[in-house]
Length: 488
Image (cartoon, rainbow, N blue to C red):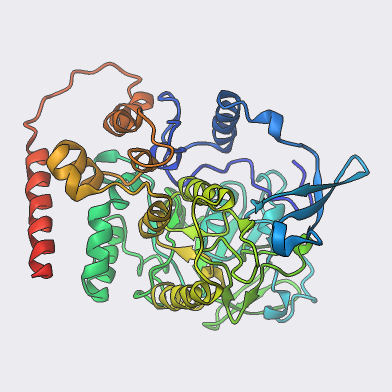
């Protein structure tokens, strides 16, 4: 119910946008009776089960604030850090060999009031979406939600069931996906495959744009609903919301263009239209990130995050400081940050070595150019990255990326699953450091964990001829032939 400074905050109705099989940690599948998309309480329950299973609670200091993280006087040789914390008013200092910053990038709200002329005159209530908890108290109000991200859409949909009218103001528009995809399976199980990632990388950009447009338009025409993105060629994170188009269709939500000006009671939009008697404005305008306890060791300069692979500050004499979770993958975040943590621990132990500062800076600049090319220059896209390619990148560093070509000879059934099936975290436990004996079985049993919470009514099932497996084998062979043809 409360919103605390310096801590992330969520609204009560938050449901995950990525499914349980794509979101779970690599050696610990979620319980099969868990729903495919988790309410926030179930996500918390999963992590509590995980912490208990691996006896992690004894390592966690709750109710503790980090005041400062500074280099030890002999940092150049030891790589150590002096960390000052506070618990119940009592300050404590300790020395650590390595530090991971895991507070993420959804803590400090971005509230650009200077971009909304007239806000000082507005007589209604306004606040950042971080303050929103539930729809009670918003009954019969006329509400303007500024933004078109996942939070903006969730809040607008929820408020539209209580309010007199809800408006969404968007500058650029967005593609909107349903959680339900092909044959009723979760969207990410069908979207996030190695095969589709390969196609995205080799076909012309216009084909990628056409394919994305074709997928979302199968659900509804975004132009008719006023949601079509301004620049269709940029690959941006889609909004995942099952109810938004329906609420627009009902008239409960109206989509508007960018706010040009605010008056005491109304909003004037870029297209010249005006909405009167606005009671409340919700600024779903995203977040900024900052680490005030770090003395500017991690910062944004020239619209670029100066972290090697979104993790390591390149300028340090010793690689003993890392940022975990400072990314926004087009897919599930938990498996990606797990890979980050696995790599970081090996770097801290000296089992993996980072390149020179110059090489790391060159990589940072190159990655930033690629990000702008794919996602655009907006500050909201600073941390955007492709889920599969980024995960594979880290997996190579750790030594856990599966070799699908060799598996095609040794275990063709598994190779087909890895290439055409969902690219989930189990794939990174098949080989290398931290190999898990249950990884292959987890991959082959994921379908039953997906269907288990849905099978609450006994019905007769019809059997179908399993031609899909043969088609996938032929498709994989075609890819292999094409690959070797390019080498000649």
